[in-house]
Length: 286
Image (cartoon, rainbow, N blue to C red; front, side, top):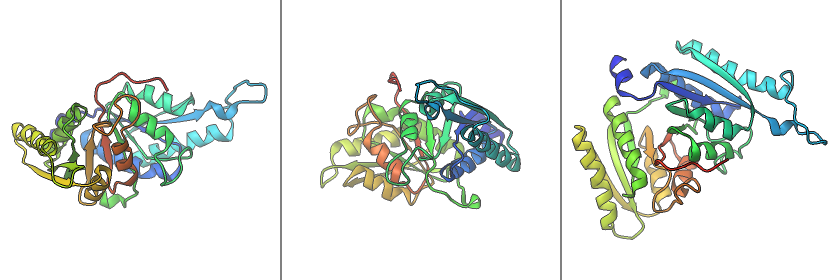
């Protein structure tokens, strides 16, 4: 415990929740991680004030309303689950804009752990709009836990996958992933997907970059270069891993304008949690 606490840079974890079933897997994962690394946990639920717009255009959230009560129920669930796990959970209910206020709260945290969809999302078809904005704009890394797993099967990081295309946008994610792998003594695979039928030089160099960084940290990195569609191959590889660590944009993304399409498709289809580490760029307004 002491070793993990000192090596993992997660001292404050934020768990956004709206009380939907889609958040339960993320909550369980976040609490287990917090327990392992000794992190402080805050459950946040944002009461969307747009739901209170009246015909005259006035806005007035009521703490006795059913929507506010749902927020209270949502954070209470995290507190109760935390108590079962031996983790103290602080709560924060805000009247406002969910994506904007979660992003604002992320500035005071080291990690956001959330589900991919909630009441504002569209089941498994697309990444929920709130989650998409948070992943794209948060001030800290965002861990998206999409699939529910039995609590006994929650493995934080035994086999870690780092997708890379060799771009600068992946540099921070690579270092972050390797640091986690070292802390958890995890096996690391660096995956680069070549759009050409035969692996290209860029893909090989991308994998070697991860291997070289790993050697500096005393880690052995398994390199894998495969042809095909990046999101499809990453999702396929996710079935053999416990965690994916990746950047938000690379050769197929549009930098700070939107969530890179590869990351979005990966989150949507991954069989394991996906940790998105953004490159240091200015965040657009929500």
